[in-house]
Image (cartoon, rainbow, N blue to C red; front, side):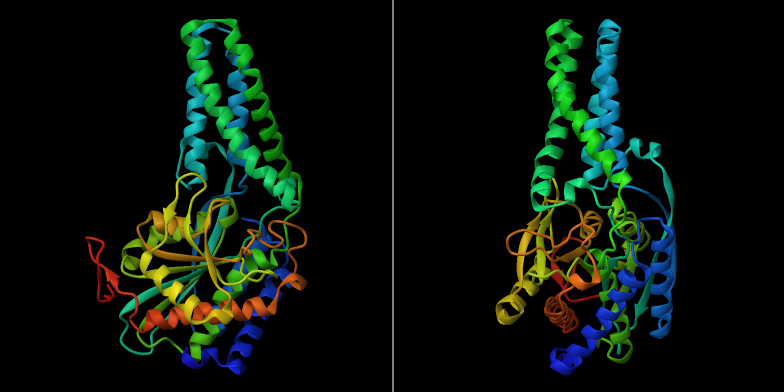
Length: 419
């Protein structure tokens, strides 16, 4: 990949390749639910594409949850069980209800921040896999960059059916967690005071928990989305980049190309990948590409991420992205915080890696066709693909040129080192 990657003929050819891979993933293979045969077909297609590009693909199997909604349905069901048990045995059942709901609150907070909890032992799991390959540098490698995109798709829940439903989700889901916390406090007070009024007061938060339980069970009765934007666009970018790097490798940067599984159920693939390779990537950078082909969006990158506690993206990578956005206003790039969900950038940050995530929210905060039946190939905007390809390519070129130093043990920036 050279500076000429921004030239119109070469850019158009790259976007054609990118679109062809999106079309195969979302159109030929179709829905690719986590751990399903569709996801397995996407993994095999990715492996074959890497192989055709002259790379040596690696397949990393791992165990994953099969639903993003199972953990929260389980927590809400357990809290409702505690509500029913609370009045049955006096102080003993009140203490038990307090402990159970407190554990549910902790487990829920850990789940939305992709942390392990004992509750995860109770949810079904099946095998998935990541497919990845290394594109070598043209010369002596000085640094590593991971470019990552997930191949799996989500179901089509009621809560994602429209912008209004999504707004409702951003109210009712936090309300469910608040209700869990309120139940914990009420049960604790009830264990001490043993008065009937406490149980009566717990009916309202229990009703909210019951509503959230129903909303977390409903997705399991829906189909998987074709996932052209989310996230054939990201996985296909990785595949298109592999083909481009075959003929135009970066000068001194080794690029790890990772197509991951099971992002939609808690980033299990990314977590497995970073757990396996953290030491090899400690002086590198991670570029996550997720949902970047929707109409009305531009190159959009996150400054921080977290549904409750914010994790901040790497200042050096953000500085590079900000500079490109300022110098190339025709690309229409902008940044924002991510509070609506998690991306594969979060496990990279949790491992202490330098990361940046591209995810195509529109300037007014919409993620086009997010988890909807309408996320089809005909909704992919080629102009948006062009903008993203040019922007991310420029970012990689600047990293390759040494604009992003490595971090030493104290977190300070130094010259790049490949270890």
